[in-house]
Image (cartoon, rainbow, N blue to C red; front, side):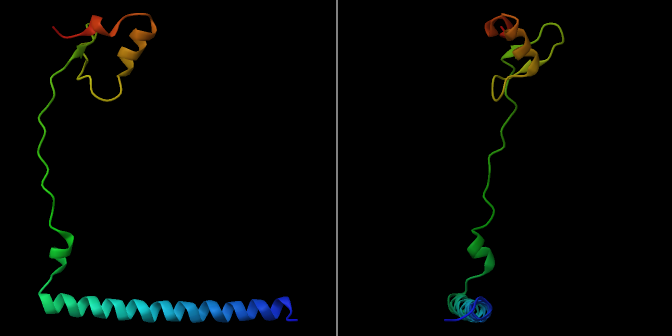
Length: 99
């Protein structure tokens, strides 16, 4: 039976062989992709699909306002601290609606 050191050395050799095989396969795949790109006239920009256009969003009107400071909140996302503090004191969110 082989010793631990012998098995470890064999494992290291196998890992090196596996890495060499991986690199060779990657090189072959890259060469094939490059050949197909050249054959069909495909560019990197074609692969990226171009920049996606996003619609610009306008500002959202304030739905809630703090009468003491004038701070406002659209009602989207996490509630601001001032509103959370007021609600913790027992006040209703509706009391701060912009009318």
